[in-house]
Length: 144
Image (cartoon, rainbow, N blue to C red; front, side, top):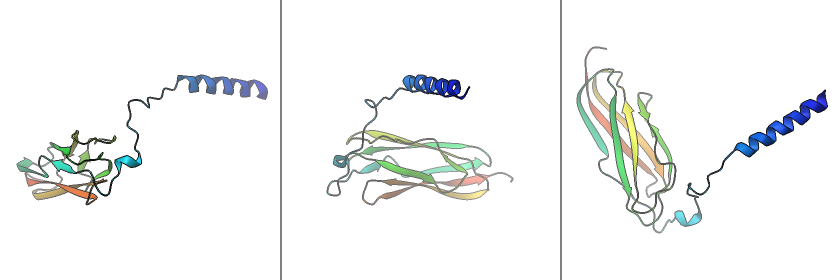
């Protein structure tokens, strides 16, 4: 009985392994040539501050920060984090961006308090300096 279970397990494992696909040709590999302290990439944003006015409390405010690698080497975003739970990141480029390539960081902010609100998004990349902060700010109105 145990022998049949083991044989079945190995057959199933072999079938599942055969069904996996790897697509190494479409993903960009990170290598040492992409990290250059002498010629670091430059992450240039269209706008580092997004301002909104009189948004009703509970409304979701959406904005996409757009940027371009204006440096001489590949730009690698290591981490992107929001300052609080009311700000949600909807993705960011996970692959290296070559010089001249553009990227986007979509953000959704759902305010939980009225009055002036200021939230940040921190980006850690292979740039100098290594951390960049983006800002979302504005006035939230309504009753809590």
